[in-house]
Each structure stands twice: as C-alpha cells, then as structure tokens.
Image 1 (spheres, rainbow, N blue to C red):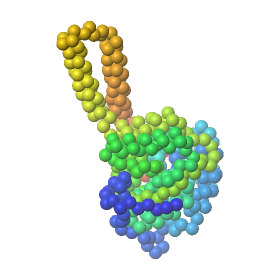
Image 2 (image 1 turned 90 degrees about the vertical axis):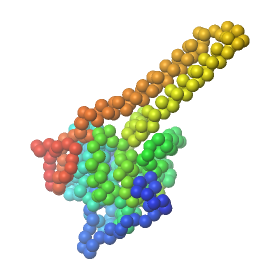
Image 3 (image 1 turned 120 degrees about the vertical axis):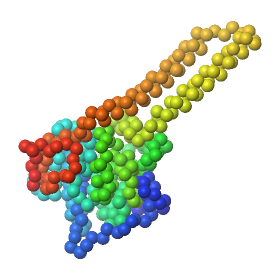
Image 4 (image 1 turned 45 degrees about the vertical axis):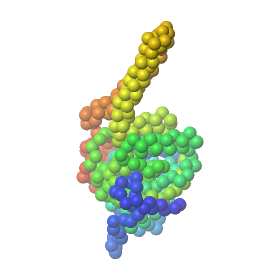
Length: 357
C-alpha cells in the first residue's frame, strides 16, 4: 500500500493539500476514540469474519474504538448475530432500522450516532482492507482532516464495472463544481469537525461521496488494492448502480438541465438551415421535395429529445418533491449498546425499544 500526497493547495477533497494544518499527537495517557461505521444488509455470512479481521487490524493501536453497526432492514439473521456480538463486546453499538432505507441512509444513521474523535466508514464485505486503518490514523495524527482510500486495483470488479465506474467519475467531475477523486469510495477517516459539518446538511436524498467532498477539509490519499468479497453476494447490480450515479449527478449539478437549452438552440438552428435549403430547392431549382419522410424524421427526433428532456426535468422535480416532504432519512426500530445519546439525530429514538448500555 502506498501513501499518496498530492501537492495542490486547496480546501476541497478533490485536490488535497501536501501539508496538514497541525498535528494531533495524543497527550500522555490520552487515547482518542475512533468510531468504525458499518452499514449492513443481509450480511450474516460476513459478521464473524468481519469482527475477527477487525480485531487483528486494530490490535496494538493506541486508540479506543467503538463499532456503530447499522442493520438496514436485513431479511436474514444479521440483526440477531449483531446482538449476540454486542452482548460479548461492549464496544459494539447496534442500530436497527425499521426497514431497508439504503446504504446512504444507513451510513447517515451511523454518522449521527457516532461519538468518536474521528470516524471510519467501512463495508462489512472486507473488500476494503482493515489493515489500512493504522495508516489512516497515522496521517490523521499528522493533522489531516480527511484520509481517504483510493482503489489502485479493483480485483473483484468486472471490466464492465470498472469501465462504467471510470465513466461516472469523469462525467461527475465534468458536470459538478464538487470534485470526487477517481476510485475513491466511502472508506476513509474523517475528523469529528468534518463529521459535524456533514451532520448539518439537511437533504434527504444523500449522495455521501459528494457530501464528503463538498464539506472539504485538509485531505490526503492512501492507495490500496480492493479485494474480492470474502463471503456472500454483492447487493449492487447495474440497475442500482445506474440509479446511484443518477442520484449523484442530479444532487450536485444542474448542468444536465442547462444542456437542453443548448440542444434546443442547436436543433432550432439546424431546422432553420434545413428550411432554407428546402426553399432553395423549390424556389430556385424548382425541385419537388417530398415532405412525408422529412416530416416523420423531424417529428421522431424532436419527440425523442422532448421526452428525454422531460424525463431529466422530472428527475430534478421528483427530488425537490421528496425534499419538501421533509421525511427523515431513516427510522430507528431499536438501539443496543448506546452509551451516549447523539446531540443531533434525524429521527427520534423509540423510548420503549432503545437499550442503552
């Protein structure tokens, strides 16, 4: 694994700085608390493997740790197995959501309930190596606000998935003022100041990679090879990835809406030129121009463009509609092992079902 420190001087994550603001060396006898955030959906095959690997990776680190595990409406024994683990390990907090709200909402819940000096989101499938946590903490102690992992190799991904992922990052960075480093996922360390800024953001439709980049902070990257999934099956298919990409672009850019103004102008200019050409043929050369074929082509092309533009506008209107409802991003069924109630949360805790340790 190689540490990458770009040398641009800016406050955005897309172009991290080469020097941290100040070091975070712990005082004598003081141990920082790190919150490990783990959204889970149907991960019963991974739970024991995950915690065993985490135990190995965290052994010997001069920090205290808590695990904020969010059960995102799993249909298998994920919640039951998490409760069993929490009974054996006081560091584990289990947040059980009322249904499946999606990974972004589950990660939002984990952020809301975390209390560490820094947080590290990580997937339970172990594709992102836990061994990298030691390097994250070392760079954070040098003074960086954000230390994010960049996938140098994507061993588990097909050629199609690698290609579409690269196309998405390229398109997103072209259309949006917020730049996301290519091949950077959710796996990162964020200082508490960054977490509090993220928690202040009110939107319900949440594209976390974009939000992480939007809040900024002094950042640096560490490259790693993304591994194959240790057990179980991926929850992501191409349709879900497409919707995820659409969510990201429409959440951080209005460029697709502006593009249609230029498309309309271009079509109008082409239409005028074509009309002038037909007039020349009829008036000057006396050519009898059949109109049926050209009319059909014009109707189909313009009709297709109009439907496409209406669909795009509908995506934005739909997101505005959902935001105006002000529904919480998630709802909590019960909580196990929580030591301190969060100062800011998006949904009230059910008093009759929360189990605080």
